[in-house]
Image (cartoon, rainbow, N blue to C red):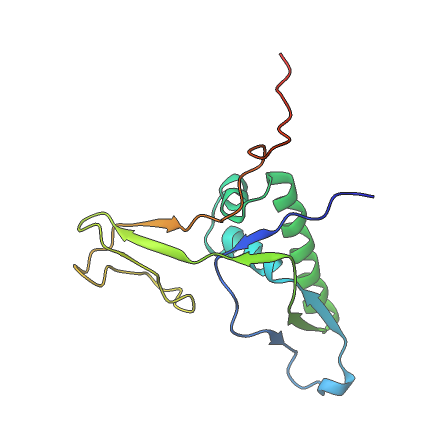
Length: 153
């Protein structure tokens, strides 16, 4: 028996959770299920354009795990588009982590509106030079627990 899957950090919960082809009645439609962490992987890699290593770090998982999640998500979306199936976003193994922005000019911090994907600006000074600051998960990073495996020399 394998170990249980690690909880993934997610900074965005989609508001729209169901997508279907136009012109096909709902009762006559097959669905493809997409987990919330798969949507997060698509958002980080394809929408924000981050490198896989950075995406994996933000989600609190290894790069190979991120690659598997991303490949699965892309496959499901492609299957839905090509075969005319609906996409239902639900479930998964994730923990919502609020993302905070910090202005590099006045150092103000705030939590942006997750539905607003346009260019953000500081609400205090109007500056556009911003840094992303994810809040830390309460769970320790890999190897920080009681059963740390010593490095081989």
